[in-house]
Figure 1 (cartoon, rainbow, N blue to C red):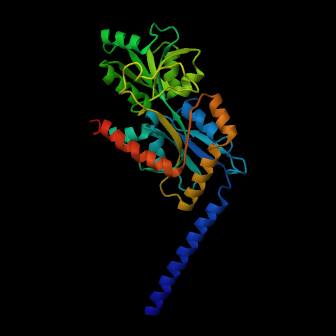
Figure 2 (cartoon, rainbow, N blue to C red; figure 1 turned 180 degrees about the horizontal axis):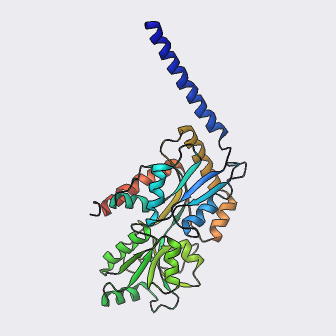
Figure 3 (spheres, rainbow, N blue to C red; figure 1 turned 90 degrees about the vertical axis):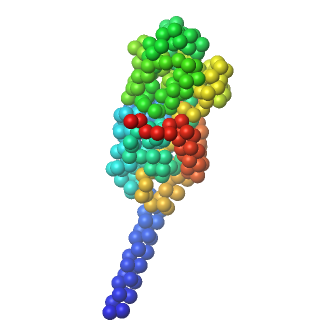
Length: 326
């Protein structure tokens, strides 16, 4: 009886050792097919555009030796795609998702989502894209002060677009309205592309959008201010910060940090391997040059740095949004 039990234990241990060896082996041979990247926003927007640029070198043997294929799952400011990813994404290492901070953390604090700040396995960060205040090219507003003066005289009448509820754009607007003592009407769109199109067409009077999207469309809009602690020296050196305009409460909380993550449950050896490869790939001169040409500010962070950033943003946003929307 004891001998049979001992043999059973030995069999279980041997099986576990074989499974562990297989997992490490799969990490060593990874990848042997294309990798899917789920983008939770529409094609053509800043996240979609940057995800394509950030992974354009993936098929080089120095990195993965396999291409990355973008799969767009837009809706509800990213909630549709992130909910799907947490619930249904394969855990074999061949499906990643783009994360957006502060978006998914703020949404998880305000709404009943399937994800929170610790729902993913962050891998590496490629960029930091501040929100900017924009108006149509023919708008009568030429400064933040112009818009504030009008909004004070016309409470709630100014329409402002953004890429969804409780994304960076929405957070920037909430900070702005509180700091200026004004009320404007927020129009959440499906993504940054729809939001900026509404401003360009004149359908919406103003908008908060990504610096990168605004930069690529700067001939068709006016950019009145940047939501960061300092001006952007590389792309919009002439655009003042909100602090310069007298509203220091509009800080860098809304800056959109972007990178890639796995779902929970992926082999730890694979997580480490992919995280190191992505951080190295994002440093590629080809990728950096392409990002610069597209007006996309870079902020490359390793897995460890991203985990720390997630924790810090969770604390900051928990103060801003202490309870769920009823």
